[in-house]
Image (cartoon, helix red, strand yellow):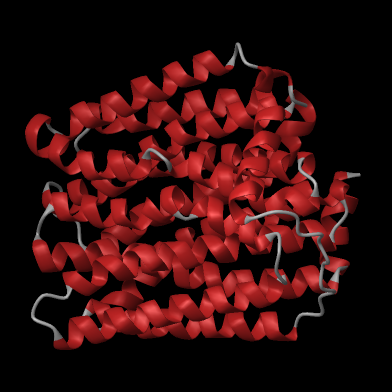
Amino acid sequence: MEKAAEYSIWKNSQFRMLFSGALFCNLGGKVYELALPLLIYDITRSSEMMGWVRAVEFLPYIVLAAVIGAWIDRVDRRVWSQWMIIGQVACLLSGWLAIQWLPNPLWVLFPCAFFMMAFNFGYLNARMGMLKHILPTPLQSAATSSMGSLNSLFQALGPLLSGVIILFSSVHIIFLWIALFLFIAWCYLIRMPYEKEVFRVNGSIGQAIVEGYRILRANTPLYHMALAIAILNTSSAVFSLQSIYYAKNVLTMSAVDIGYMASAGGIGGILGSLLTVRLRNRFGLGKVMIVTMIIQALGYLFILFSHQALALVFAFFWVSFFEVITAILVYTYRQESVKTENLGKVMGITGTLFKIGLPFGLAASGYIVSGAGIGALFIACAVIQIAMGALCLLSPMAKVV
């Protein structure tokens, strides 16, 4: 039955077009994710500034996600997605021009980082809504897993992507290539056949946000998942960011070496995405999600036992393997348990909760590393996440199948 479901999604022409566009968006996003911290490090040589730029990237989830989610339930999601991609291209071109011509490009790079993430969230929200619209509920798990594997796929190509980056004398030139990848994704959306959804619009955006929160609170397992993911995302993002600083500043790893580190995480993510549906079918969604959250946190501690590049590479593999399983499970449950006409507003609220700790954790992480050391930071991340996982065993999410 599982194999039939996975095969059926590929027989759907709309899904194939949506997946193809997502492939190029993920390729551009992964290159951007790898290039931006390297660029900021080259400009500032500062772990604090690396933390601040990542913090700024996630601010849209706190200040805009709920509004974006409520708005998406009122518009043509395909057209909205096209505009979100155009917005990202504009940010990339602005960043490239700033680095090319301004003596201090950070004044432009920080706002661009903010809007890049805002437009990206708008695109992802609409894409999940389109996925819900074009496929029946039994296929949502396989479709979500397939979409989730894209990020891991390009992360696994880390050495290749980092090699492409260092081919250029200036890292920021890669912004133009990312813009090209996004334009190709935009072309796929133009060609995709899509029947416009018609929703009844009642009340203001503010009322829609309140309604989305009410729907989420009534869905107790999803609400508890959102709170747990808030902790997991913060710990994982802090680990990933400061690992790059540790790799560059302490282990003196090159951009290619960091690419191999990212590649290990990507391979772990691919393996995790392949096993997710099987693990859920055998043990139940809630139990698998809680166990993976706890086991993932152990990966933050690996560098305490060995200050070698290999330990950091294996830590990336371990963390990504379990993180992808957790992410696919929560996204799948949200797809299955929320009605199509409410998905945008609920995604907006959960999107805010998922990322609410990131700006504060990322901004503080650089100062913690400077003051107490990276070991203390990673221990704190592990302890908090394990404690959160233990509490989840007592929540209704543990009973979700």
